[in-house]
Amino acid sequence: MTQSLWLMCLVLFAEAGSLSFLTTPTLLYYGRYHEAWVVALLGSASSAAGSAVQLLLLRWAVAGGRRWMRRLAPSREKVEEAIRHYPSASFLSLLAARATPIPDAPLAIVAAVVRYSIWLCSLAVFLGALPSFYVLALVGRKVHVPNGILIGALAAIALGLLIDRVRQKRKK
Image (cartoon, rainbow, N blue to C red; front, top):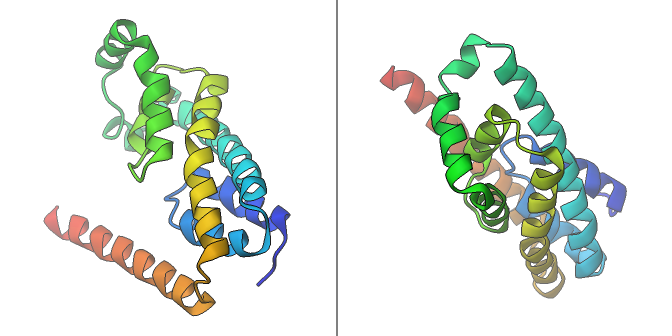
């Protein structure tokens, strides 16, 4: 495997707009070879940039009235009312979701519906990712996790996602 920070940034950029199951193993791996603060700073910036692109794509999907988005997106009225009543909650929610293992995809859809500021969304992602990315990179430096275990963990996560997807289809 490569130790290039550019590749790490590319992976984390792409992960920001997807299921994000490569993020933890990527940070553990690159933490071995680079200072934790460098991995955290570049990784958080890449993740924030990827989230900005994701938000732009979600805005496009929501605005176009695509059928497949209707079932995912909450009603515009409910979301706008919640944003009016709790304007800082959006930023803090995005920040907290990125700082924890909580999935942030539902928040991204809401942000797209209400046309939340891409700048604020990116800032929340950046600030939220910094501490967790730092800790993961530090763990990667201190605890040498063999590549086989990282690859096995990725395979297990991918298998879990596949099983979940099959279960959902069978329920319908």
